[in-house]
Length: 131
Image (cartoon, rainbow, N blue to C red; front, side):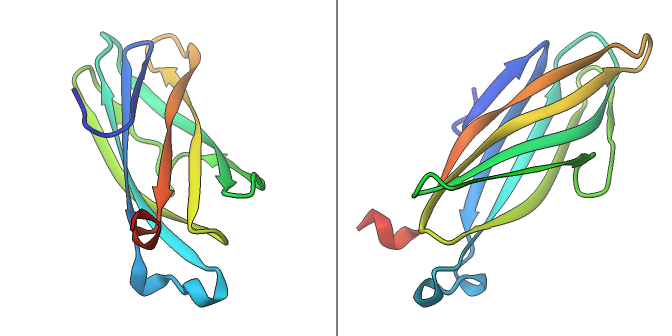
């Protein structure tokens, strides 16, 4: 079991770990940058391919933005049963606290059946907010 936020959908486990990036942030200007590492594990009996992503990004004031597009970090990985794919990306906020969640559009390689996989909600908090 992961100690990070995780969700499993149709045999696909998604876990996310976020990290505050102080050197890329500027709290005086309300600029907070976070990296996040996503691990996707195919626990299904099918070979699958990640086609698209759809993120919901919300800051501490409830202001929302969405990001949609093909693949992740320019790739559309294929995962065989038992396969794992990891990538790191980043986001920014104008508040010291924010959250993200979303979905991946996956496709079974054999029959081209498409399905959505949930990305769990994860919260990003600048360390200064934890004191």
